[in-house]
Length: 188
Image (cartoon, rainbow, N blue to C red; front, side, top):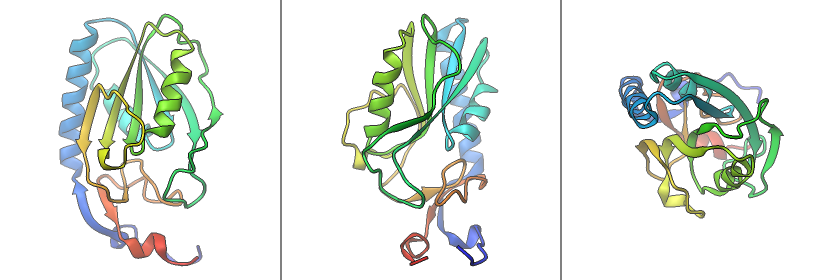
């Protein structure tokens, strides 16, 4: 990509504002705090997209919190569709056996990657495993996923911002926006 990119010009519409995200993340933090009632909690972020969400969420949780990071891949480069093949690029750095674990995701789309990840993490014997996602796109679901904490349900549109990317760009936008189709359908 040699062209200069105007991040905001590539957005067709702001789907979820920065203010709406902040308010919902605060609500989710209160829910998690109430549900775990003082129990220590391990948050597992699925890199890279969920990092901003997890950072904001953990500051809203009033419990002893430990964090860990995983990186998985089912997309490649500038792909807009999952390949269906899941690879663990970075595994957990500590054991979660006997821990209460909250898996923090940026978006649940087909659910195939998350379904694989949930089975993988359950094999590590946590005391409990729940899922928290910022965005849920049920129109594309291929695998049943039990979502415990949901930020927003969104339509079947290609979104970026607040951690979500296209070609490793747009993650730094403070809102979630719909990427203009000509941006991801244009030849490189």
